[in-house]
Figure 1 (tube, helix red, strand yellow):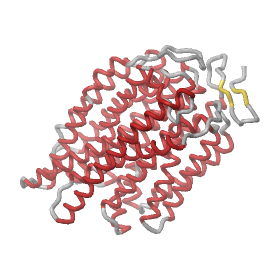
Figure 2 (tube, rainbow, N blue to C red):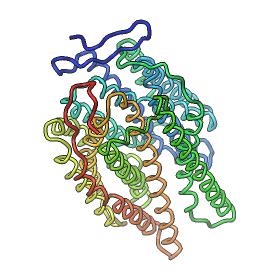
Figure 3 (spheres, one colour):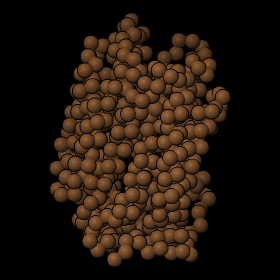
Figure 4 (spheres, rainbow, N blue to C red):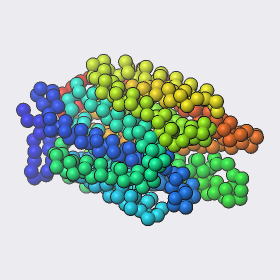
Length: 506
């Protein structure tokens, strides 16, 4: 039986389950191309944090302005990702891939050639527009074409991309910044992105089936203000917690507090209206983001678990570099190298973990993974100014192993709990939750670190001791946030394998 049925009139392709239950070579090639493109996009996203100090000096900008290079990226992701559920149903796989990689490549080129700060911010927005499409496209395609008995191992490769790229990003960035300049961060990525675009345009064929439903403009606007407002408001938390020694700093803190309140208020109100709008539109299958996916208890539990894990994970990987550089006094390159062993562990274990999921399900992975991750977060609370860099490196490696054991079963079990027609919406929700939860984790941990560090400094502590006190407070909150995960690990199950195209159990 052919794996696909091409329609020349719409350019769409209906996915049909292979009778042998084996992924066909052309489908496997599409997934590998999407994995490579997603890796490049996420790698680029995680290189900017280490470059901020260099950009402040080279571009002559303030720390607040420099922060917009990451805030603008996160805002764009938060606005675009919720829309991808509709876009992936409206346009073909090939169209979406070309659009995503073209936007990403264009943004990278603008960043490389940017003469100053304003155009660099624009470049980050264009880059984020492409990156936001890539992960939902990858996960929707995977769920559409991969037979149920192979989804775990394929999702293990997705976990490698999601986990390995953020770990390698700081290492690569640190090396380039110590030896060359910040422009090379984009100069290295650009040719790889262009090659991925060219290969994908040549080899990717259409998978899935398109629809002709019109886009609801009001939903797009409400989504932008809702998710964008939340992410922007969360990004202002650090500014409200900053130590204020001068009138200028006090004024900046007041502005941040006003921005925080206004943005979060707008975000909450717009998000409430967005949800109301989707509940009405989904009655006629016209929703921008169909919320019927939450009727699956397993999907909802997996999303909740993933959200809490993201709060802790993204918060900690933001605080650890600050602890290493400000408290232990290590270089940017050494900071990146600390994360490298954990990245290698994730890369080596991802496919293996996927195979274990396919055979034995979620609990054999999720329970030990969650307990290991939470245990390491509690161990992080023992770090102080005398902690060795090797202790941090080993702890980071064990935390990475716990995360690898957790993310793969969560991704697979969540989407496999849905009916196939909801895969694109489920993928969009997974990406949105990760983005908003990650932003919340970063904002929360940085605010706590800043406030605790300022209090210790006021009490007369040295810079190193104050930095250690701030990091300790942030790690403690991350560890507390991880506690509900220990319960959730026992509740999430692997949906029963079923023929592709059959309704998933709810």
